[in-house]
Image 1: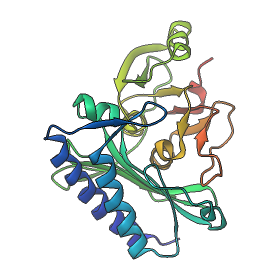
Image 2 (image 1 turned 90 degrees about the horizontal axis):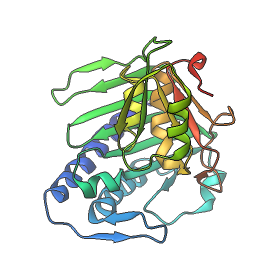
Image 3 (image 1 turned 30 degrees about the vertical axis):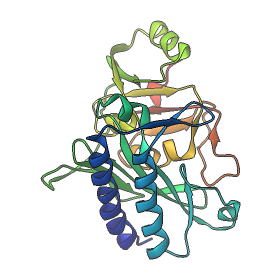
Length: 258
């Protein structure tokens, strides 16, 4: 499956969106709140407009599911679907701690085929394509292949900067194999595991497809494990976009916590 053009186009689009996000980040932007009390900013909207419009123009035959666009369930009739979070970690964006990302994934028959996660404040791009590995491109353009760590003990668990749950706290208390707790916002938690800087991430709170699709692709291509809490595979381009079953990410399946 040759997706060279798609990946090249997405690299340019995601950086363009990230640049506009940074411009807004430096201003005194307004914050609105959705029905679920999650924040929404001009940066979410502008990034979404850039990404969705350019993908529609260049890849007319692919469906699109984006957090900030009106959903069209006709997408489910298409084997190919873009899944987009134009600004993942809006809470971190509002707090101005830099831990937010732009996420683009391409799925085929409900499976993530490639994913990109761009960190605007650091000009870093994580990306992966199925069967071709996961990579990190830094601001100088240098590219390194990503691989999860081989730790079996003294594990480093990464938890959410803004969404830590009681279940996660109990998990940490009940597992002596955990040496260190790291906090991070947005999909950066999965990137830390793909990069070999952490081994474990458990998410009990609900997420959405656009929160996980790109991270899923990158983690697995770096050699990691991404599963729902019931150990089943996560699927995408579903009618209901809520990941209600939670998920976990591990550097190796033997490190599953109980």
